[in-house]
Every structure is written in C-alpha cells, then in structure tokens.
Image 1: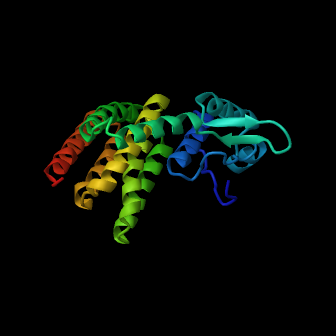
Image 2: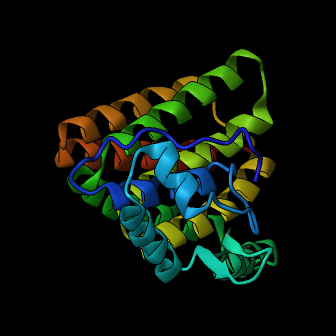
Length: 238
C-alpha cells in the first residue's frame, strides 16, 4: 500500500470501529486499495486515528468476517485487502453481459431495483464519512468534466452507486451493486456517456436527501433519473 495513503479522523464517536471499516470500504470502491495491499498495523492505525488498539482490533475482526481483509502470519504478514470473492462475481457478471447472457434492459432494471433498496437504507444508516465520500466523488466527476476526461467520468459515475451501496451498510447489496456497475461500465463504453447536465444535478439532489435523511425524496430522485437515463439510451441509434 502506498505510504501516502492516509485514513481520516474518526467522525462517528458512537461507533469508531465501524467508521474505520467504512473508510477501508470507501478506499476499495475508489480503487485506492486493491487486492493484496497491506493495511497499517494495529499500532499504526491506533496512533494515526487516535483510537484504542482494542477498537482497531474490533474493526479488523469485522473486515475479516466481511471477507475483504485477510490476516497473514509470519515476518511478512499483516492485514491485507482480499477481494477474491467479490472479484469473481464481478468477472462472472461482466462475462455474462459480454457474451450476451444478460441484456442491457435487464441490467438497467436490476440497477433500478437495487438503487431504490440502497438509497432507502442509506438514508437511515449513512454516516458523515459516507456523505464526504459521495461529495468527493461528485467533485472528482466535475473535475473530469472540466478537463474533458470522458474515461474517468464513466468510471466515477459508476463508482457513485457503489458508494451509495457502501452507505447502506449491507455487504450483499454492495457486492451486487458493484457487479452490476461493472457490466454497465462496459455498456456505457459502447453506447457513450450522457451529457453532464443529465447526470450531475441528480447527484447533488441525492446527497442532499441523504443528508436530510429524506428517504422518499432520495427514492424519487434516483428512480426518476434512472428511468430517464434508460429512455435516453433507448432513443440512441444502435
């Protein structure tokens, strides 16, 4: 893991170990942590974040149980990112779509169903760290728009939904959203990305609804956006 990668100050005093788990998940979703990257030691985490080693130990145990961290023994051991299971599912989904086993309509439908479930839970369970991650994603997208970086825009737009899933605090929904997202990324690379004005305003609206814990508003915003997106792509020539 790069030495420069830092973890932010714990903002959820009620459950600091869960906050640490969420920070690691967000860095995985953003691609800042990858397979076999080594996490800081228990002592390093405790010193960097001002936590007790017992709190860090609890967070590590949760990440191991969730399956995205593995602990290796020995002189070169430690806690490492392990994405074997999730990567297998994502690869299988991509292959199914690439080979025609899944249609773009099925992907769009699955995305809408998952997104509604995710935002309902995220409104109830999101933390300040989740909001900051989503705001950072939107800022990255706007920066990519400003410099005309379409490839980054596509990746960042898909990442937004993974961050929403992380905010739902449901590991199964996070895995499913990530798997659908990777297949949708393939679709968008072929069909082309929509103009920023069709995408960015709803990002801000969803974050504002999450901040207010406005479940109905969040559901209406995301389902309306995804239906409009589906309709816009349907009008595009083959």
